[in-house]
Image (cartoon, rainbow, N blue to C red; front, side, top):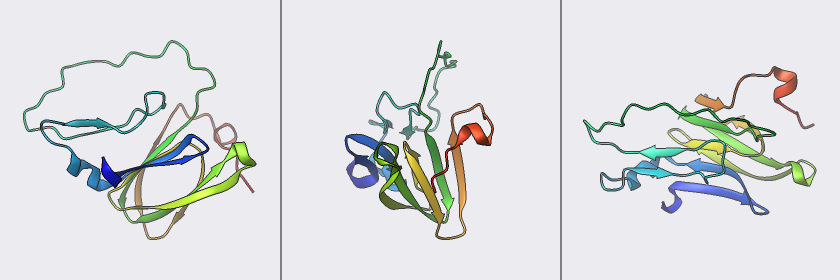
Length: 143
């Protein structure tokens, strides 16, 4: 998908995936769906272009029998504004390994430690796994 989907890797691990708003330009009625995440990611994220009247048949998603020590990922969409995302690797003493900017209309999947700096007033939609376990069980802050 050209540079419209950017996979940021470090030491063989995908740390983040940035889905630029232009990624939808690469879809067509003949190629209406593209999953941008690897099969093993907890978030299975796809983009779609469907024509008017197209129908996805009624269905339910089946629950997983058991999840143990499952990684937590975070997904966000910048509705408007601009943020800088800094990435950190816990396999390297929480070292900062890179940064990038996410713009209005872009999407991002985070798969590692991160810091977000709001460069402009920003409207952002965030999704992560639940259920919420309480602040003390959700995050480990880096000093």
